[in-house]
Length: 252
Length: 252
Image (cartoon, rainbow over all chains, first blue to last red):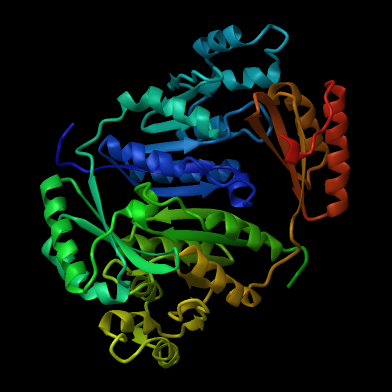
């Protein structure tokens, strides 16, 4: 677990309902924050359809490009839940019933309830390790660097907490925000110069318009907390040089 | 504008802040819904970093794969706003100042305010057509099948309304939801059979847990409204066969 290596992850959100606009994704923000806590940078996210070929292609592309891939959605009992089968194909391995998954679901369901549809949730790619689901039993799984989780946010989060010890990371990024009632256009030149000075601190500029006033939040992120603080002090000076005062983000 | 051809789009959300979890994206759901109204299927979305090479690669991949590409974010005045320059490179054309954009911004800013940073917002790839911004003047642009919009939701939406007449589409998908207090596992077999019967109606199954009760929303989507209604009636019968009654989504 090197301190200097940058660990990267990609999240693949599988679900027509997110693309049609019916459902607003609630998992990406959570995963971005939690991965950062673990010292892993969420480098990309994709939202794709419940389509066998698309899932296979996307998973294979992303698992080659990033340290970790986390998928959400499509592991339930209905006909549109095809994620597990598609990922088995992506890895070129058999999808097969897992004895441990059967045992888990048998504790959750009566014999009558444990029908063919629910048994579908006990099939995982050969070689996969289960990720426990403390909410509704039907497990996710890990195969190589790919972690396959449920789409329902409550269950996805519980699964992520179960698997997080499997994720090696580097140093978490430290983040500080300097917000002020100045315009981006007025701040831009000084901010660009500050970015040149602090190459190891990522500076993002996000305009806001709230309570009838415009302003900017400058977000500073870096692995070295001391450097982030120094940069934040410089940006605060820059804001004062424009005749404004930094404000608490909670007050804007 | 053929009625039977399926028109597809890809949304590329450009912004470190969405990946770090600092900001929750608010544009995807809007675009998914509005594209559907225009008879265009949002087939994929990607969230990527403010990184020149990543933006170029992603835009080139997606513009070859889909009818339309819509990007959001990274067209402001600060150093981290690199979208326009990266897209010019992706197309292999020059990034150059646009006289119409200069005229638009000169009406919005005083001479003092119209500094180098703000002038950056008047540069677009050669051959691009401006997309007006009725909120804060700085325009987006269209080049070939790629539409480059602001990331701030209020501005992004205003720009989308400006450009929508440029988007040819097919028939909008009609959507109906049948919700009931049954489990996915109980419904799955009948639902799978219904999906086989209605191959032209896409059936998605989404479990919910609200007010202490579990249930499923079955979402039916298709271009033929009559078929969607028929399928919805079949699913309602299926629910009744399980001893439940369809409920209004507003009541769950």
